[in-house]
Image 1 (cartoon, rainbow, N blue to C red):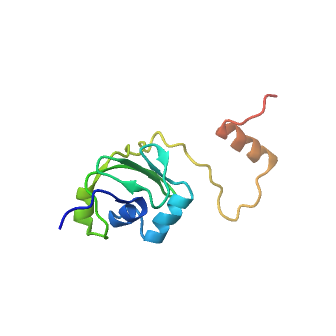
Image 2: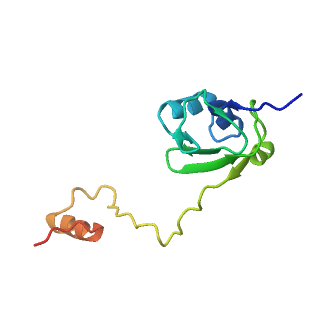
Image 3: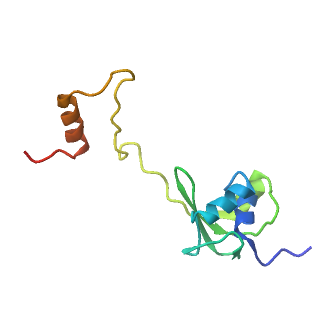
Length: 127
C-alpha cells in the first residue's frame, strides 16, 4: 500500500496526537489557530512532507514539521516519528514574571494595598 502524497491538516493533527479529537482539530482550524507554512489553514487544506504546521492550544503554541503523513490515528511512538518538533523551549522559571496573589477570603484590597500592587506591576501613576 502506497503512502498518501497529502492528507487533510485536521486529520493529520489528530492522527499525530496534537489534538485530542478530530472535531477539536477542525474547530481549531475554523478558529484560526492552525497555520501551515505561515498561512492560516482551513480544515481540508492538504499537508505534505516538509510543511511547517503551527497549532495554538489554550496555553502554548506548538510548531512542528511534517516528517511522515498518516491519515489514521497512530500510537504515541509512531506519532513521534511523524513530526519534527520545532517548538522553542519554555522560558526558565526565573524569567517568568511573578504573579501577585491575595490570600483567599482576604476581601478587597485597601487603597494602600492597591497602590502597592500597581507599583509592583509597573503601572504606578506619576504623582
